[in-house]
Every structure is written in structure tokens, then in C-alpha cells.
Length: 295
View 1 (cartoon, one colour):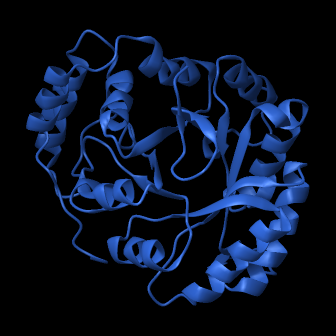
View 2 (spheres, helix red, strand yellow):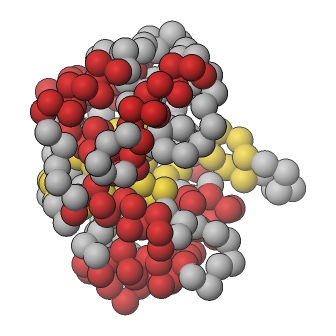
């Protein structure tokens, strides 16, 4: 496994991170899968209180309790479950965050969260109040670092200006190159780690039937996928390697549900690394695209 210091933190995380959202609720295989990931060198696990109404955090906490000192756990906050259980509402208020962290700590069976992330964000949020909550939790030792999960350039810019964030999680793939326009360089310049999600583009780069995607026609998606699947190493590994090749990316957060998916994700590290020539070929095959909203 390869490792990299995550932004301005002291966390030396695996470049393949385990995205826990994909875990099957109630599956007896979850604990073995998570422990197999640790044995393979993955030490960064990403969950959220939103996933399966908190049950995902419980799965992660139970499986990793015995090796807690060897791993880094990240979770997210900001989506508040309605009292009647009918859904979630966005709530970035300080009071709610200070309450929600206690529940996450309990579910994760830990006394601290390595990275606590705002699970979204808008320009209408009480941003300074949200930042105060994260800073207070840092001072209390309940979290080590904080960040945001967002694809909105205007929101990201404000958080970079106004807070001490360590990370931004954002969607980035060969089919979604929007972060290249501004966000990746901004975050790299400010030593803020980028955690890339969605690197397989909903499976369109691997084995899913082509469809229109972020301004690309289904035929364009088909052409890019065909190129990816015609190489000597698996398309899934290539897709992850493309993301990891950018200097701003600290880790690719791969959604993993099965042992096969775990091995596919690991192959991005164990197989020969992406050459500069192949990287150029991939970029030539997929023209840059750009954000239209929240600029």
C-alpha cells in the first residue's frame, strides 16, 4: 500500500480509502471485509451518520474497535433525521453538530473522530457558527481535524478563506473533470487534502451501460469506456490511478461492498503505476468539463 500525509494533518493515510457507504446493511460479511482491508494496508475508513440512519457507523465501529489505534475513521454531519423518521433535513447549526457528534462517537465506539466533515454546505449556511462548532470539538479532543464534503466551488472558496479545514471530499473522475478548473489547484496551494469519491463514475468507466453524464453524451461515454476497457490492466484500476495521478489528491475513496471490489480497488496500487503517456491519452480521450452552478 502507498500512503500520503492528508493535507495539513498528521494523518498518514492509505491512498486507497475504504468508502463504507456501500456496505450491505445486516450482512455478516461486513466485519470480515473491513478487517481484510486493514490487513491489506488500508487505514482510512469513511462513513457518515446519514448512511443507513447511523447503522453504517455502528458497523464500522464494531469491526474496527480491535484495531482502532491503527486506523483513521472519518464521518460526516449536517443531515438531521426527522423525528417521524420520514427523512433528513439539512442542519449545519452549531447546536446540532455538538449534539450529533456524541451520537457518532457512541456508534463508532471511539473517544475521538479523526476527521469530522460537514456533509454538504451552501452559501446560505451560518458558516462561522459551523466553523465554531468544529473548532470547539477540536479543542475538546473529540475530533482531530475537520473538513467538508462538497463539489460547490463558491462554498469551497469560502471555507478555505474562513476556516481551518484540513480536507475537502469531492467527486472527481475521468468523466467528471470539473474540479480541475479551479478547486484542485486552490486546495493544493493551501495544503488542504482532497479525498476523491466517484472515481468510477457510477460504474460507467467499468461495466455499466453508457448514458448521458455531466454534459457528455452516451456515445462519448461509450468511447471513453471502450478506451479504458481496452488496456492491459483493469478499467477500475486505471480509473483510480487517473485520480491518484493528480498531485492534489490525497486518496481515492472507493465504495467497497464485496471482497472482489476490495481486490479491484487494491489493484490500483499493486499493478504497475500509470505512465505519463497513458495519463495524457486518458485526458485526450475525455475533454474537460466545467461546473455550471455554484461557481
